[in-house]
Image (cartoon, rainbow, N blue to C red; front, top):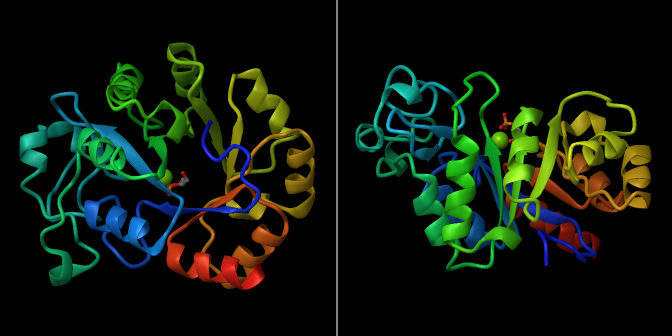
Length: 250
Ligand code: G3P
Ligand code: MG
């Protein structure tokens, strides 16, 4: 079974873990997502200086850690020395930058779905796709993974490497009939910026059998509207709140 296939309800995907309440893209945030009952997690990947996939959102360290400069200029061993709790301070001082491998190893012991977003829009990171596919295979997680990226050339490469793993296009604006475009590059899901996810798009995508998983859906009114509009999933910083709203609508 592919990611979420055959699901009737809107799946709740915890954005960068549970970014709203815990330090984004760290194990504490992923554990929180599991604990509150989210169906899945979304995380972001860059490559370290020694070519290891690491889980962090920005190309640089300043916003989320106590490090400085580019992720690509540090080895994993060096990256591991930084605290990755910049936005949550003392409470989560122990949080560090996870490698993708550590995260997959843990995920394999759960039932969670995982959306791996490749952050290769600005930096090309040659061989990033091969490395990530290899790790997914190592932990036999093919059926629980979706690859997404704003770099659609990278999605084509991922699809060529392993066509059975779903790829999903990330986009910010109103593409015309995006299900046709997605299919043309071997992708399936539409991961669109929230304002693009209007009722007509949800309805047309459903008729085409194309899953829509908008980001980042945090306001109660938006969560409600997307669940009622039949969105396949929502990517949210507040999975616990989204799950409460989903229960209240059931
Ligand atoms: O994958 C959905 C969303 O995470 C894309 O934007 O900047 O939060 O990675 P960003
Ligand atoms: Mg992301």
